[in-house]
Length: 430
Ligand code: GDP
Image: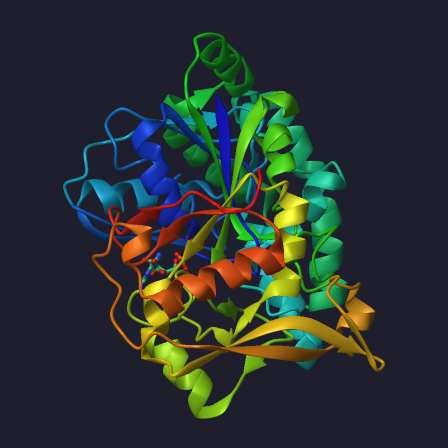
């Protein structure tokens, strides 16, 4: 049985917590896309952790954590991350890395920085982790697969050819120092030696696991609106954030994915540039940012303050639809307990017409939010475990949003810890 945990919006919806929670019953947790450019925050009995590359199953003894072929694998960061958790008394997790995963090269990170510098004010707000140059090279067919580290002849030849091309750009476009092929080869030898114990033919491993009836969890990074095809292009990430891509980025048949848990936060936040229709500013935004998440809404990887906004039903309905949602996990609801009234974006006005369908980027720039205001519940809902015990206005908020987005909210998260969760029977027909 395969389940996916994915985001409906711009990321930072609380996927890490939901994955960590669902991982209790999973034998295998797999990252299938993205790289170390975003992170999950997880709070458990070992403490509070920010993971960037490792799957959120690493805190359990019974799970195998896999870096799938779809991931942008930054080997030094993976190694640091393993050390950072084992240094804090987490037992060494069982980790496998796909032999088909491609490697983030030192020059990908440099190219990311140089390109942002070149674009100046017109930049994409990249986290400069090398993700866009990495995926460009992957699809230009000049990337390096993990398996290639173990073929010395091929590696040498390929380095010569790739470096020749990179150096032209470095010299003539960016006016930066050239790459020395022998140095790069040495770096790749160190990568080879540290990654060797983890390398695995992951699709075979998963095929056997499926036949043995194991529970597999696919862990997504970011959310629908950052998908390169269905998101707010070009302010998107470079790999698909959709559950459907889980099949490709892990190497399993698409029909095996039976549960798609789409995580939606009870308000909105976004990092980086791009349209954000329900965005709020000033003191109203500062207060939500300060109170948001677990200790404020600041990027887990970058520390950047997140842009804040009210819940956006148009974006979330779209986000859930493109994921193929079976269950919505509605998170961080506890944070809204301070508000007298809570605006919810229920439509976009574009050229004088109101729509509830999420438009293409050019139209999105013209969209103005249409808000419906709901009464707040003015109380602390942390610690509540039964849906019926939530204040009436809080339930109204959940049910109003469920009705608007059209997908069943079956999990409500009311705190950062594993057990801060309310299971709910949806009133929508599945
Ligand atoms: P991800 O990238 O989707 O995993 O999201 P983040 O790592 O940015 O998670 C959002 C933050 O919210 C983290 O600091 C979590 O610990 C925290 N969090 C998750 N669920 C809840 C919740 O229900 N309530 C509160 N207060 N915090 C939560």
